[in-house]
Every structure is written in structure tokens, then in C-alpha cells.
Length: 113
Image (cartoon, one colour):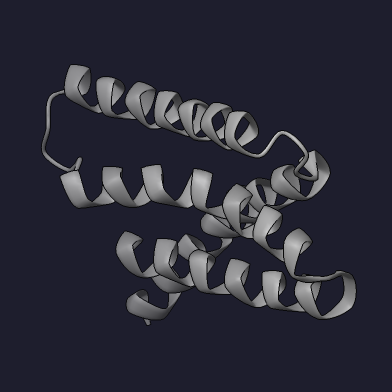
């Protein structure tokens, strides 16, 4: 269920990045995609590791590692591409952060029915 929701949020981010690319150019679309990837990749890593049935300490460590990886992703991107559009990078990450819980709710509702 959660894998489907994370994948759906990633697909939506790619679609939004395509729209950004059509209206404002390829470079800004890349910035948006990088922001989305910085959040999505650690989420996918946590989902792949699995967190159901694990001790609470392990789940806390996974969550903290996820946020550390996202922070590292932002740091690396802005070090590699300091002239990137920070607003679009953050918009990409915010899109994924907002869409993932909505996707989880929709997927859970679909599986419940």
C-alpha cells in the first residue's frame, strides 16, 4: 500500500515537472525534479527497508536517517549546482511531502473497498 502511494507521488512530481518544463524551461524542471527526488528517494528507502513489526527504536532510527538523507541530498545539490532555483527545488520537495499522505489515504481507501 505505502509503496504504491510513494510511487504515485513520484509520478505526480514528474508530471508537474513536465508542466514546469513546458512553461518555464528545462533547467527549472530539473530543479523541481531534484527537489522531489531529494524527498522521494529517502522515502522509498524507508519503504524498502520495511518498518512494520520492528522495534520502536529501529523505526525512530529509520525516520531520523530518512531526514538526514534528505538534508544531505539538499546539501549536495546546492553544492553541485549553486545557481539552481532554490524556490523550485523546495517546491518539488513540498509537492512530494504534500502529495504522499494524500496518496496513502487514497490507496488505503481503494484497498479497503
